[in-house]
Amino acid sequence: MRRSMGAGVLRAAAGAVLSLYPKAWRERYGEEVADLVASRPVRLRTVADLAAGAGDAWLHHRRIPGARPLRLPLAAVLVAGVYGLWLLWSLSVRDIASLQGVWAEAARAGSLAGELRRTATTMFASAGAMTLLSLAQLNPAVRAASKRAPLGAARTTGHRVVVTGLAIALPIVFVLTIYAGLMLGAGQPLGLLGGAITGGFFVPPLMALILPLPLIAATSPALRSAARAVGKSLIVAAILNAIAWLAVAVLVAMGLMEASPWFVTALAAGAVLSVGMAALVARTVLRRASEEPVMLPERTQLGRAPF
Image (cartoon, one colour):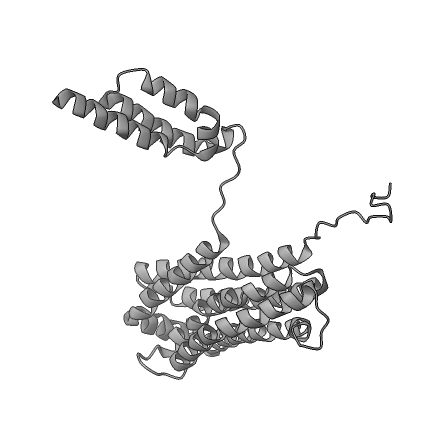
């Protein structure tokens, strides 16, 4: 009795492990392997071999005939990026000793430290402003959503842009309020260096928040040019964000001897993630806005496509 129960558990475990294989592998080999497992006694080693095979199949996923490249959803990447940015920002500004020590050491170089700090702060603020101003390029979508606009795909898309804009307005105000409060000294004082780096952790989340608007507009041929204009503005914002981080890097390098390894690691990771996220958002908008829609062939009066 116990032996039969144990065999049943192992067979069920083997079936569960088979379900962990990539979909392309299961579609091509799954039925054959399942029949092979069903025709033989299942032992613990069988389950272990199947588990090892599942890991190997995922590692060599592209070699499976008919397999598609693995792609993470853009929304999941951006959400994880936002959480990662704010975690790294928290780790950076909590190291008060490094913030103060790096600034004190850099300030010995004279006015250069002050110029770098102002450059970083101004560039981050300009990147955020450019992100918000890019939404003005979607004015055609707002006009298309008006009651006077003719019914059609552009009007439907315009309605979606407006509704989505209203939905994300509150999160945008929330992010801007937190950023303004930090820069004005509300809550924990960040110091001169902390204030200079803060913008780099808030600009990419702001860009990610407005991303749905141009992507929705890009689905309509009539609004694709407006979405492309938004993408170009976001490219400028991403460049400004990168320039600001370059100024921060020089400033930190000037006082590197006073920085802890954890501070440098968190700040460097935050800079890479910030620049990467901003570039990803801008690139995504430009790519989607540049995709040509699939045009159906025109039909003649006889209902046949012209040759």
